Image (cartoon, rainbow, N blue to C red; front, side, top):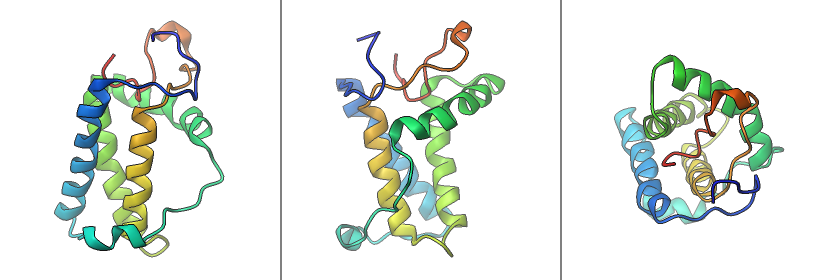
Length: 137
């Protein structure tokens, strides 16, 4: 499905296999940063509320992420891993305003949504690049 509609479901076996790696990276990085997430209590913790939906968030972030990816010569998979690590850092730094477990739950939901949703096109169509959520294309 190379020409999908942004926001529509995009399912792949590869995303099913590699998507959970992002969650493991997030959890491992949080542990490395000294943040312990109690897996038993995660079901009781709500996600953070946002005024932005998936597509709005992607439109705000993906072009900047693509610039970083190109600057450091990362492939999509490496960029995805970098984003998971950066997400852990953000969760750590925002603990005064957002409970770490809530940040974790929100990130996990977003990773799942991101790996199963067709992204919007980058604003520079001449770049030949897809969104960083098109990890394994």
